[in-house]
Image (cartoon, rainbow over all chains, first blue to last red; front, side, top):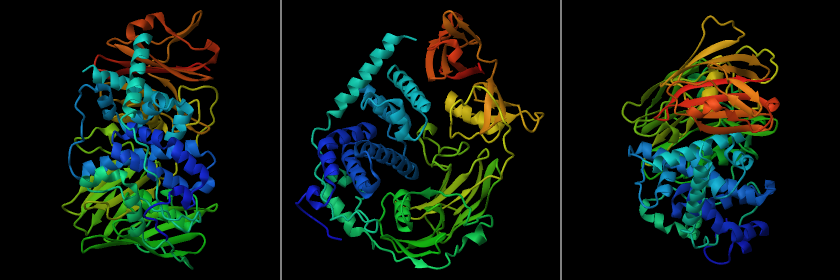
Length: 161
Length: 442
């Protein structure tokens, strides 16, 4: 395996031009999406890179790179969240509950379960319709609506405490 | 329902998300990767994710991580031997395991190598670190086996087998074993998964009981101290005796028992899918029902499973128990008494073409008027607010109204003739469910 330790960039290393273009055009937006899904800036960038690598590995079967990479980012973020839960459990530490402060809505968002948080971010940040969110989450559109409905309700209840 | 309040809150949420997104100002650093062939036989580098916290801040230095991961990666190519793919170990510890028909616990597109690689990536977040490798891949074209081995920093080497079968050209993993970990006499009797798991290792023994989507089965208990809705893993964990007795309700579904040794990171994998005994086929039905009026993957193999699935998907709450009327005829219809902890709800179920369905909940959905088109669910004492599901031929709408508004009715989004069903979920002052009513209109 030929390992490159410095320049040239991905564009020069045999990546499909369309994927490189997507990376350059949407990279920042996807890191922001991952940040909203995880609340962790460092992890967000890494997860986006992982998503691009995963996309590269399946490039032959990718028809719509934009939605595919976005779904990959969401899935990587969800896996990251699940792994965090596993680590918390096996180290017997309590989950990191955010303290409500000036950024109370953001803090309340961090307390939502992963599915509701993901549905809410995809709806209110990415402006995706129910069907698209359902496709990404692997559930029915009505389940998305319910997740959003209950997520909003939980957010309200949290910040009204 | 206060629409202005709702809109304001959603606008505030939208603004918060967009403002927080601005915390990220720098575009991601450019990816530096190994020269990558699109051939399936050459695997891609993947950055290690389980790094010490002290290095987390350096995550932006993607280049070094990718290169490190590439260097850590074991041999990319595994020569596949042809011949009988023996299934060592499983036949003795799991007499019911049939390698040719066992449910698949993991699959993806690609050949055996691709499936194995993806499987290990999925089950070991750090793969290929810390020293996880594959060998002895054997296939007869229908079945395949491989040996996995993990040699970490410590003196112990963990090893086991992975079993695959091919169906319509698609390879899937049916089971994995870990040497020293026995899944002894595990049985899925349609109501519970029970049996004993033992381990000779000193590491923590983590056991998950999942459905085929990787979600905890309905009856899987959540670990103490963590909110259940937030938790994906967690039937049991033990680090002292090396013995875990499993006895978990599963309500007639295939359950995946996944056992992993944990010692700072995941060290092993042993898992198998246990299918319940077959049930009698459903009888034909007709017309609209309360739930579901669209295709749903929810478990609906019998009256209790259907009532539970309805409770989880529509009410959004896992029942503490669900009991079918013992005097109901074998082929339904069957009333199921569902206990939500805060209240009990009776749900009428019946078999249909694609599984059981819900015909009525509680006292029914109430009356429907056409001028103006509205529905009037029954009033319930003590209710503060009511979440109403309105299922029409164009889709499902949910609205939440103060309980006092029920006497005026809930406006239908479409004409009454399009209505398929209504479900009203009544909540008390603590947002607890105190009643559920529902009926169909076709």
